[in-house]
Image 1 (cartoon, one colour):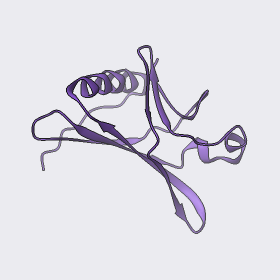
Image 2: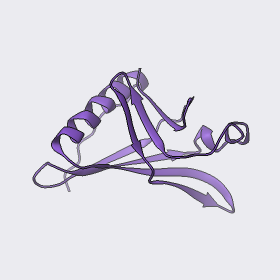
Image 3: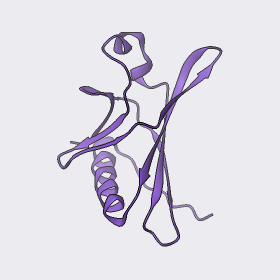
Image 4: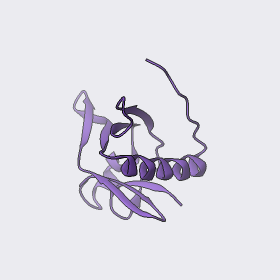
Length: 115
């Protein structure tokens, strides 16, 4: 089973909007995750630990990024945006395997847009 965590051991229940970009040569890219009102920002969850990164966890292991930012509206956290950098073709393949598993677990679909 594939899951996303901000605090190790606590699965994030909110499904993110994920946007991918890829370099022209296909070797590198970014994945931007946007979570609207994620559970990790709830008071009860935040008492269980601090957000130390975003952890993408599946049967192959763990992908990690420390690039995690909260968005505030009127002084209250409303969203989390996190960026995972993909630095090689192998990283890209590994990330896509995670996303395939995560998508199957959560009923997500992939929509390709051309810019």
